[in-house]
Image (cartoon, rainbow, N blue to C red; front, side):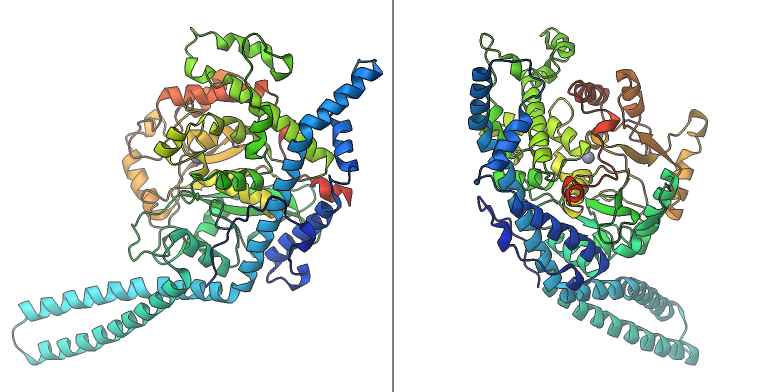
Length: 585
Ligand SMILES: [Zn+2]
């Protein structure tokens, strides 16, 4: 059985000692793509060495504004020295986090390769079970009903006994099939263990997915055969991609059927599982230079729960975000007298909202914290650029701005069980537990670079997903704040509302849902942004909003902050871009 992947917190992983199969020896073409990227990056990382001096010097030079009007040589030298002293440890921390990320990811992938045969067994056993067992169970139930009916209502006759005999034979066959199923289930249990998400990881690995390690939330890159190849200038429409996502959901029976996908452990199709999203990423293959659309699955509810700092560290590391301990260097919030100008980032427009009489008073508490994080992001991005490391996607950076881990007290951690909570002004959502951040963290790991999601298609899993498991889920306001484009159910117009209950029932049966796509790539006007979100939760039977309007207000406000710090524009999106370490080669 494949052991859980552990997150090794070694302060400084030795990149040269990281074990990794040759790309040609990996099992499967998705794995080959992954390992090709990992191997090239390992080579690049081993060439970056801060201890020997020049790398750090280079970063310091790079961070110094070359257009600095300062002419005084002495002052420049002093500034350079201060920069080196103050930022040196942070630069080192970023590099350490990156090496630690690589070493842990490689270890988890080696383990997945080693246990592929076992995992394939899990998948085929479950596939057999889902195909044969529920129908057999259904038939036996029906035969037993017939038996009771004949016994109770038919008069004694030759026909009655012949019929009963025939039924007994059929029931016996069915029971034998059930016995086989019991054996199969026992073997699966042995291979999967008791942990739901670990079992799910093994099931998906067995199906050919490249799956995120146990220490970050569950996500998986679909097998290479499910990627869509694109010509040099070709694009797919959102509707085409949503249809393709539906087809993949059905191909792997992700939801809606027992003994498969998210319900691999359940005997009953209606058992609760988490929600799932299929995120499409546009990329260029490192193995053959072809343009592809890669589907990545994210699953909700499986975050290793950041009670411990190292899980937050692992998540930030996966997304190429600033290290958790970056706060150590930049989190001193200045008092009124010593307010240094350097702490101010996009100052003027938001000074108005700092007015304590403003209705946004709760949000304003987080103003300084958000500014500190914006600084962290800017430094982290520049350092990574200068060292040609992986860069964070815009979505990841927006998430980082919205998370308020630094403001949590120990008591908060005890109460919520988590170090990372979104800004309370937006929603008390544990965003690490959503399907979107799960996919995002694994995307920047699989592509060995942060990439934004071209289109996100979320599916309902916690609630009844319908017969085919294709019921669209409303994107939660938190994820909608950072996503580029997402699919949701089409708004029910006033004239359609009367017919809606029957339309809903029909869709639950057929899996066909009218959908629409919301693009949130740019920030136009706070009001437009707000209007787009007001009636997001539309996949319920009722028309009631799932979230109070204050949540939508705060989402719009938060996006305005994103814009103020310069992140909410097209140029910050990382889509179909070569990683810096690839450009260098
Ligand atoms: Zn969410």
